[in-house]
Length: 339
Image (cartoon, rainbow, N blue to C red; front, top):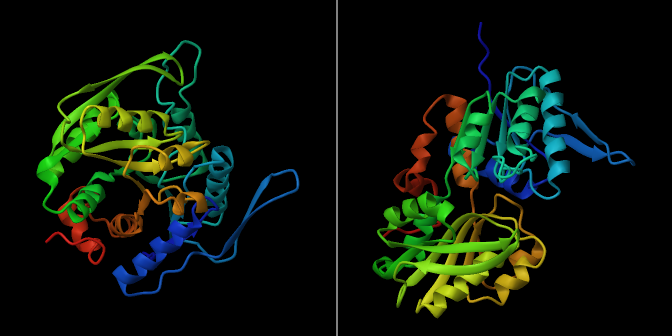
C-alpha cells in the first residue's frame, strides 16, 4: 500500500528566521502544526561540516530551506551534506528550497578561460541527491536548464506589485519603473506592466570591472516617482549612482525594489546616505541588524509565498499560479490592502 507522506521542513544555518516563518505560514494554511525537523548542523575544529537528523524521515517529503548566501561556500556545503544525510535516511523526495541561489551571476563564460560556476553548483546539488529545486528570482532564467531535475523559479514581482499598490495607492500613474542596466529590461518591463507604469533604462558603461565610466538615462523621468527594480544589490554602488542620476534628470522621488539584498561591504552606509527614499528588499537573505535598523531600508516577507509553493509541490498542484498578484493577494491578506 502506498504511504501518504507529509511535507517536512528542515533548515540549515543561513536563514533560520525565514525557515521558521515558512513553518508558521504552512501551519496556518493547513490548520496543522508544522515544525522544523530537529537536526544539528555543526562544524568540527577544522571547519568540516557535520549534520545529524534527530527525527525519522523515512518515506517523507523533505524540503531543505537554505539560501546559499554569505559565506556562500559554507552554506552550499551545508545544503549538500544535509541532502546526503536525508538521502541516506531514506527520505522519499528531497526538495532544495533555495531563496537566494548563490553563484547565479556566473552563468556564462564572459571571458576566455573562466568557469560557468552556476552549472557546476547545479551538478553538485544533483549529485548530492536533490530531486527538485525551488528558488526565487534566478539571476538568469537559463540556469533552470543547468539542472537535470525540475526547477521552480518563483518571482518577487507579484509581491512588489502588491507592495507598490499598497504604499503608492493612487499614485501609480505618475510612476516610472527603471531598469539599472540594459540586461534587466525584461524584469523592469514586467513590473511596469503589472502596475501600469512607464519604463525607463539607465545605460551604464564600465571603464574596467567594478568601475563605471558613464551612465545615461533612456526615457523621460522628469516629475516622476522612479522605482528601480533589480534582482541583486551587492555593494549598492550602481544603485546609488543611478538614483543620483535620476534625481539630476528631474525625478521627484527614487525608490528601489531589489529581490536579494546581498548588501556587502559599504552597501548599507551607501544606501543610508544616498538619494534613495526607500530600498525595499525581500528576506531571501537573512538581514543583518545593521540592515534592519537603517531607516530607508524596508523588508518584505517571502514566507507566505514559499509556504504556499511548498504545499503546491507536495500536493501536486500548480506552482505557476503564484506568478500572479491576484493569486498572491489572498496569501498576503492582512499585509497589503488593494482597495
